Image (cartoon, rainbow, N blue to C red; front, top):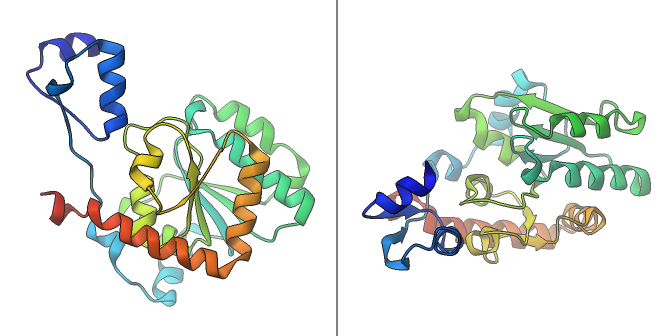
Length: 231
């Protein structure tokens, strides 16, 4: 179906230059048939909330503090396995006090993820929120000490922009379109290597200067994805 639509469409709109290159390569389409238009985020992610507002909003979810945050469906390409392995490394080596909060639906990799989480050392340390009200999403970002998005393939990666707009330090992968979207607005690492990912998380959590730098650069980068500018 996708090849048929691709060939018969007059124009195709995609959300990153990487996706455009992929479509040209895979479907042998002329580049001038494909238009790149970045996505945007709600203005709610840019709002400043007081600490009390954030805590009160998240009470119903029984959020543990402090926490490392990630938002993704547990499909294999989202690479949550590497994040859980990185977190286990941090618990084993540094006895990290942070919990790991995973927000999203179960996907094709859920079984493998649950096998990893059966380790006794991770008991009560990794929390799945399941579905949350989309209007509450900005509060999760703002409450986290760091947002980790280890995905290995994205067409755009909306959580990247949400996290930057919300003002939380971002750690993400060097794969797919992610460096194109993030630029210097986050710490980009090889998330296939769970040790490197773990050390990046520890570095951001323990270095306030680095954390603040990533927040500032992330907010600055996110402004190009403001709907008012994209409209």
